Structures are given as structure tokens and as C-alpha cells.
Image (tube, rainbow, N blue to C red; front, side, top):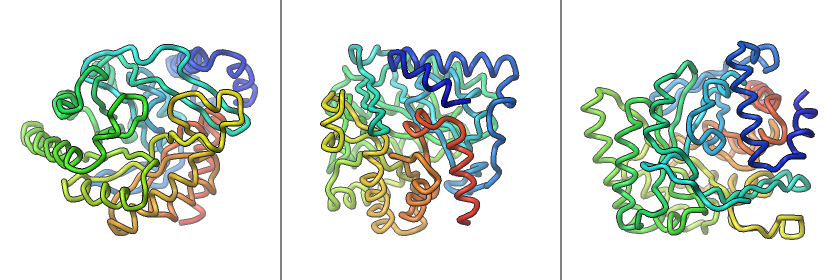
Length: 339
């Protein structure tokens, strides 16, 4: 059934198709019809970061930026759903067109630019939570905020979402906000994470709740850079790493239509690169450090490769766009068989 829906959606502008598909999913949820068309959720609990994930397959941030559809998305079999990226203030993102399909490569290029309705709207939405899986909230800085004031934005967002999140993701790796990736390195990263940790300690006391914080990193780093970033994240008492965000390396797709568009490339072309980052992080921080693997997962075997490299959980995005809910079931079955 999804293949037919996909054929129709792929005839539309990608951003229009994105909104229509989410609206349709929300409508099915309101009519209580989703269980009739979605695969049954697979039970395969994973305990990390003090949380119990119903199964290890999650939805990556970016699909539901404003937390408008997570209750419906959660009914598709995900063990966890991550919403956002959300910024303190609403912002429109970059000019359209800013989303491009590369079907020959099973890939997507986006330069969305953290378009979202702001943290106030997102919090109002998550207060309507019905989803019983794990809910992550991904936070970032506004485009107009200077790099040297980035900590202020992250803390503002963290203060708003802390009480409502099962875990929080600090996004410092999107390629579509100027200067954001500079926060991944050296003293900038140390100061940012140290400041976030201090805010987290205060919020934990205020809310009597320990919320894990993970950091999402980019795939476009050398091995020494990956090791240094991983060590800093652990030293600053962050609880985990999401590896990885999209890549700026277009060498695998430059011969396809839209292959030279600016923005981050996701899907099959980033699969090996993200897996290599996971492996380096796991070798650097040891097998027990929580890693969430994302990037190019379009089959059960792709997910197994991430787990074998050192990930504890996996997330899908582009593979989900191309394969639909059956991908969630396939991955969960593969991980159950592997265990």
C-alpha cells in the first residue's frame, strides 16, 4: 500500500508532499484508523540512559519539527520519536525550494534551516502527549543568534522543554545554520556543553527529574576530530551521542539531478560514513557509552551494521520516506533475530 502512496506523493513538490503526508497521518490517527494500516509495534525493550525504550527503532528529528504529529507517528511502531529541531524563537528557515529528492540514490538533500514555530508552540504540543514510547526533543539555536551567544539559546530551549522530554538532543551539527558546526570543536564545544550541564543540574533539582542529554554530531570529521569531539562530550557529562547528521559530501550524487544542490545529504550515500563515525566513537569511549546510530538505514541489515559498530539504538528518516512503516517492522525483526 505504501508504494502506491509514495508514487503519488513523489509526483508532488517534496515539501508539499511532506506536509500532506503528515496531515493524512494525523487524520488517520484522529479517526482511530492507524492501527488498521500500520504494522503492529514490536516489543524488544532496550534500557539505556536510565530509560526503557519499547524497541530500539526511532524516528530521527526533522520530520516532525513542531511536535504536531508525534502522537500519530508513534503509532507506526517506533520505540521512540524525536521531535524538533526547535529553536527559542520561531523562524521561517531558508528560502524555498529547500528540499530535494534523489530517488536514484535513495537520498534527500535539504537546506531547511531549522524552520519551526518556536519552543513555546512545541511545548504546547507535547503537553497533549498520548504517545507512550520515549519522546526526545531536539534543540538548536536561532540563525540570528551569534555563535558566541549560542549557549543562551540552547539554555533557553532546554529550560522550556526539560519537564516534557524523556531525553534532549543538542543539535550542533546541522549544515544549514551558518557557523553551527563550528560549535563542535575545541574550546567552543567545551564551554557550550559545560554551560548546558550546569543548566541541567539546576533543572534536575527544580523538576526532581533526571533528563538525559545527548549530542548530535556530523559525519564530516576526520578520525582524530571524531575522537576529540567524543572525548569532550563524555568529559562534559553528556549522556550519549547521536551519530550522525547529514553530510556535505556530494561526491556520490553529483551526477544525479539535484545532486549539486546546497544542503545536507541524507540516505544511502551517508550510510558508510555514519557507521564509521559510530565505530570510532565506540572505540574511543568504550562499548557501554550510549550511541544512537542514524544515517542511511534502509533495511534490517543496515541497522544491524550500526549496532555491530557500537550503536545501542537506531533512528530512521530518509529510509522511512522511501520504504514507509514496513521498514520499522523489518528492522525490529532483524534486531530481534540478531539478539
